[in-house]
Structures are given as structure tokens and as C-alpha cells.
Image 1 (cartoon, rainbow, N blue to C red):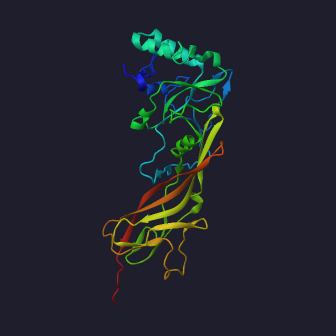
Image 2 (cartoon, rainbow, N blue to C red; image 1 turned 180 degrees about the vertical axis):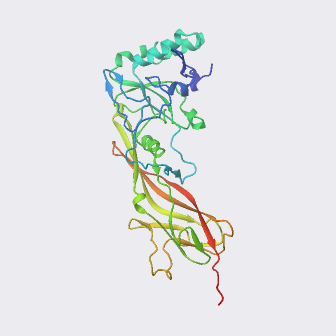
Image 3 (spheres, rainbow, N blue to C red; image 1 turned 90 degrees about the horizontal axis):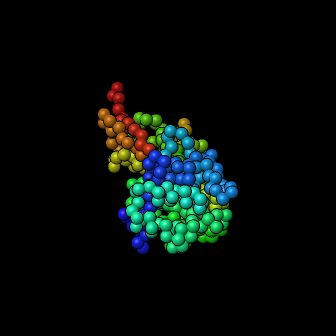
Length: 349
């Protein structure tokens, strides 16, 4: 039987007909009080609260997401952090059970033939016999909740999902979770998890000339800023009356021509947003001007095309019901598009 740190047995819940067999904290965490899986999979319309000592969240996870102000549509996608080493947490601790709910699950396990006698005694001591909890804390049913580990949806294979390897633990209402549980949910953790839910529109740029341009001819590039407005996601733990909102706001457009035989405008290829505009649409009479955002190809694409990549950088910030807030790493999302570059044909008369 695997053990937790400090010699505690690992706990995992597996669905087998009616009985649940506990063997690892991640699987244990994957089953909510309503028996559903994928602890962090929620609905933006989900709600929750507490009633008569029972968790009444309508989803299995401790976290509820409001995506009503998020980007939508087939072309949207998740942002990638510009800080390569940073990602939202792969697991976290949050309220999961009332005393009666946890007792019901554990009794099913103890009455099954799966756990060893030693493991059963160890967990009975932990939850029932006062080492450190007594009778599942049923005498405190109105005063708090059992917290347990959740694995963030889509991160099940991430090594970080194994960081939440402690047994379920009790937290009184209004108290902070134990300091030795750094993955316990906080306002900032909620903001980081909401970051992973942010969806932004694809970045197909408008070009002039469109699709096909000429060697040494400046090509103007711009974006319809009506498609690139701030988006946000709110993550909440209803039973804790805690929420955080993470907002993504576009700040620049990066143009990569798809070949080294090109010049970008500006030279960095980074087109800053100016007065809410990204680049400037080409207008008649501007042929002799340098575009504020664009590219000039120096060589023909031959019988093919160049893959121009346009990437938006989004500034990510958060606020919360605790008054805390701040910045998270910027995020990027981009797309490729084909650009045909032709030689200018001279005509002899």
C-alpha cells in the first residue's frame, strides 16, 4: 500500500459499482460528493452554497467558473504564458465534504475487502480515533468542511498533479487553511486557475495588398479592434464566499513574416496598440508612406507562399473579493496565414 509523506497512507477513491475503494489522493480528489469525476470541470452557470451542513454546489468541484465575459467562437484559444516556467497550478486543495459525506465514503471502503488491515486501522485512527481527528469532526459539522485535493482538468498527466498528496484535512469556517498546505485555495490561486480558462480570438490580420503582394512593396497590416477587447473569467468557491476575476487585455501585435528576406514595420515587428488601434488600415493616397505596422518582402515566394505569423500579447491582471489583486504573466496567442509574394513584372513597349 503506498504511503503519504510522514508515513500516512495514500488515499484514492475508485468507483467500483456501489463501493468506493480508496488508494491515492488524486483519485480520491477526483470524485465529488455527487460521485462525478474531473474535479475542476465546471459550468459558468453553476452555483453553490451551504445548506443544513451539506455542501450544495451543483458541480463536483470546489471551484465554479463564470465564463460569460470570456472570448468565444471556433477561432478562440488559450493564451500561452510569456514566462516559460509558469503555468496555473496542476492541483489544489478546496472544500469537498461535510463530516457525514466523508464518513459515508470511508465506511464503504472499510467494509470492502480492498484495503489492508493495517491501512484500515491507520485511516480509522486518522479520521475517527483522535489521531488527529475524532469521529470525522461530526460535532463540528456546522463549523467547517473537509478539504481535499483536486486535479485541474487537463493536467492529470502533469507531474505537478502529484504535489497534492496529503490526506483530507479539516478547516473551520473563516480560518485560513494550514500553512503546510501551500496548494490550498486562495484568491490568487483562483486567479491563476481562471488564467487557464481565458480564451482569446485568433489573430488573422488584414493586409493591403490582400493575400498577394509584391517584392519591395510595403504591405500594411492591421487588426479589427472590435474583435480584440478585454476578456475575463471569474473563479469562485461559493462555500467560502471567495472569488477572483482574471482579465486579459490586448497590448501589442507581433508580426513575423515567415522568411528572413523581409523588413518589418516597426523594425522590431512589435506593433503597439495606439488609442485602441492595432496598426492602421491602408487608404488611397498612402502608397508612398511607411505603414505604422506591416512588412516588406525582399524576395518572391516563388510557386508557394510565406507563413506570416501574427501574435497578440495580452496583459493579464486579477482582482478578488478579498481586495487582493495584481498582475500575472502576460499571455500570447497567434495564428498563421499565407502570403504570396510576386516579382514586379516590367512591361517593355
